[in-house]
Image (cartoon, rainbow, N blue to C red; front, side):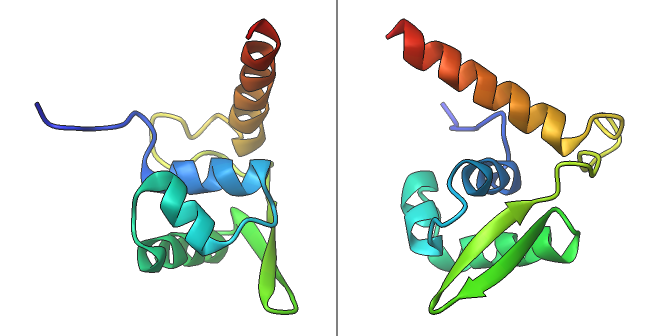
Length: 99
């Protein structure tokens, strides 16, 4: 059976940097099981599209997500990034309380 995910790597990186703004590309790559080079390309894509802003702090980056932008793609274009991220954050907090 082929493996697949509901959230693309771009979406997963966006969620991760929202939850952990000081995370490194290496840490993201280990979480997602993709190469560090792929993570850097995705971060560049998200930055170029305005979904995130990278601020250099010494040798590392801090990420800030632009929650006002609509989600990418025709189906979800009326949903703001922040709505999705806030929903996922609320659900993860809810699950952590139940455990």
